[in-house]
Amino acid sequence: MADSANISLSALRDGQQARVAALHLSGGMRRRVQDLGLVPGTRVTCVRRALSGDPIAYRIRGAVVALRKCDAAQIEVQP
Image 1: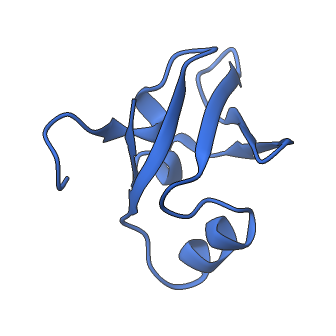
Image 2 (image 1 turned 90 degrees about the vertical axis):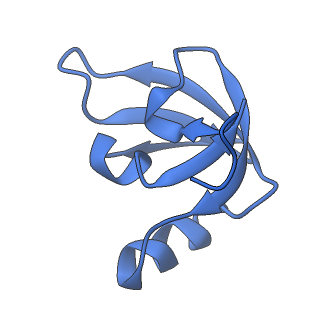
């Protein structure tokens, strides 16, 4: 991760907000999250986790989107 103060998106707790700092994904998954609006500078809120902890729901630009924990772990955010 580029900044030691940054954390992965998967580390956010329910209700916690952050701003996307970097994407460490490639190929189709990178395109998918960009199409969902997850680009550097975007505000994201962790809405809810499944009972098992995977997937995790996030509010992104007014929409609620579920991401697998392993994919969310590849997105760097600034709390």
